[in-house]
Length: 211
Ligand code: ZN
View 1 (cartoon, rainbow, N blue to C red):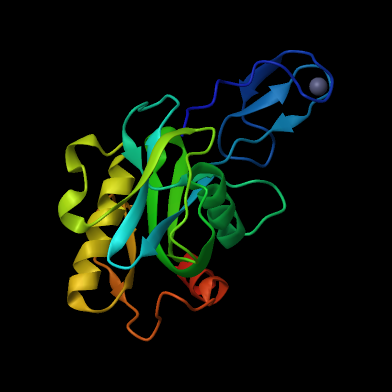
View 2: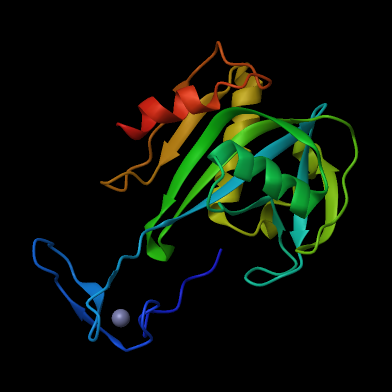
């Protein structure tokens, strides 16, 4: 979950870029001074899961900066050519060694100061097996009272975990959105008919993005 360095050179021809507003646009872009290629920058999607086994949730202790040594839900950057749910499952396997069935979309949290969107799915572990991947020092299952709240790596992870335990107590898992355009927190949208193990992820995401 890093910031990106600013674009300095054109990836098409190698010449330097300058910052200016292209014709027909309304904001500054990095434009190549030689070939005119416009290098658009857009937010990155960070995809992850809340992996569940019984009443426990699987967390990873980070082996890399930022926030080395702090605990996180398995999550990472979406790759080209995959869906959000595929990215969430892949990151869970890579970072936590856990094979999960990805369920309903659970939280979508904007992090505009680092140009990221963090998206978490509920996920059911297929077996109680897990192992630390390259980016994890340790992976472990936690009951709610064992969660190391003071050592959670990112605010979006802490929020997602709080939403999870609140919803579980309430007996219904919703979709949680926060930091919308006006920056105000939005309450969870109850979706009581969607259990963890359904594969309706695309159906939920599409209408939500039109909001
Ligand atoms: Zn160029």
